[in-house]
Length: 115
Image (cartoon, rainbow, N blue to C red):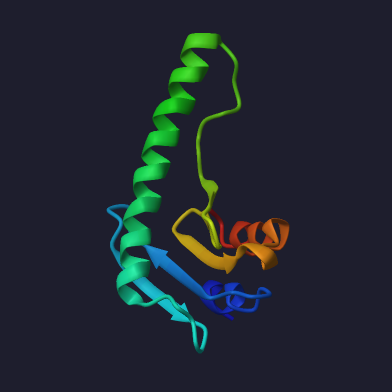
């Protein structure tokens, strides 16, 4: 089973996506009746790349300024909105409604893909 198909098995999954290092949407799956569409996932892919870039800059700066280690590299993150959450690791992500967000289950699937 592909990573996207595995992500879509998570409770409440509305959409799963894979993106390039430049933020281009490469592949996706949408649940039937999902309020998401390909355009939204493409924009979200760009947001994910931007957020990883910013988090990486912050992690590297924090390590250099404080001497503390373990913040870099940044691979994954969660972005919580009012109604939905995007959970991302590596080049894959999943969007779930906040009332069904199982971060551990999502990261278990995302971590299994080598990110």
